[in-house]
Length: 503
Ligand code: GLN
Figure 1 (cartoon, rainbow, N blue to C red):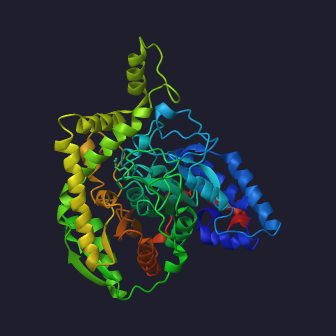
Figure 2: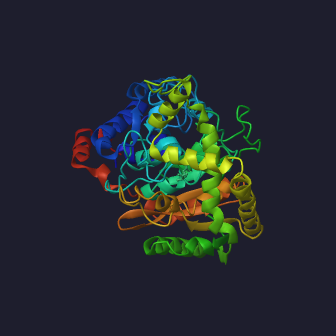
């Protein structure tokens, strides 16, 4: 194993005891990027110099006897829709291709304060609209387990970077599954926290009532550590919750005896692949063997979730994206006849086809005469979906489902058919509509590709999900597997030449 294949808590041990410096850790990651980024393309921007500077500062802090936190000196990737002062934040869009934000998102400030070192900005579907990372203006990211497949989306770059050892952890955003589905496709842990748990200040808005920032990590312990750093009230986000934040590492106990788990039957219907079904079912059996009670249940309005989401999310997007008009910042088209022509040209040239499709869908749903029939109705159905979950949580501590109906699909497979792409979020979307926390953890492999298990909890029950994920991790070794891509000959040779870096 190299320094790039370890978790944050493992690296912290080496760093705090002086066995590995932050600079060595940073350099190992840059070498890994050098070796495989051509094939993976997880990043829009790699901030090499910043990383080395931050690592040197972490080394200095350690040498001068300062208290070292669990994330000090740890390389991290940030999705390119989370603003970073002085570092380009493009949303993988032409319209923001050269945008350099003048401030940091709250989560970025919090991670910098915790000692995290920025490796770069991760690729994504343009404005977080998509499930495959193929809608990026900069070209797709490839799945490190099989570069002919997608890494999932929209936070595909974040997931691929963590899976491939190009960052120890990453942040993504999840509006309808964009953390959990790529986590599942790339075999890493992904958590969408409760709506309001993590500040959205500095997250470029897609659908504000659904968006939430969360971590990608290599195991559950790291997930708890990153949550500790990013959760908590922020006066700069009006939807931020003032709920107290526990120390999430206290949930890392392998005992799940007596926990009540519900298995909603609507998540196991047609469209679910055999391989995913088998892996998920064996994880459920494992949880039962460990002492949880497992019972089938029903969330009857699940079948309306996708259509509800595809009214609400585009409606909010059409309003949020109105600000990109070529006037104050971002791309502006040239050769316009007049003001209105400039708007039209700028938005046509600046946005890719999927973003334009969403803006049109959303504008239609909000327009006079259709508002009640579409948008208002979708809001009512959203309430019914929330009630399904409320009823289930009267009886259960958590719900267990697949994260996605299939393993990662091939690049190009769904590109021409938006509807089939939308279907890959069928298991994750209801959770965003209800604002609940959910975790994706690897529960098996099929066709050589990772399969994700989704654990859904009541509001603010992230701890319960971590406890279940941790228990699963204790009796499986899926989280220790690394994609074949990271074991390239070139890398092995590097490791032989640099035995000091080897662990
Ligand atoms: N794939 C979904 C969409 O395209 C969800 C995206 C997300 O969570 N950002 O809307």
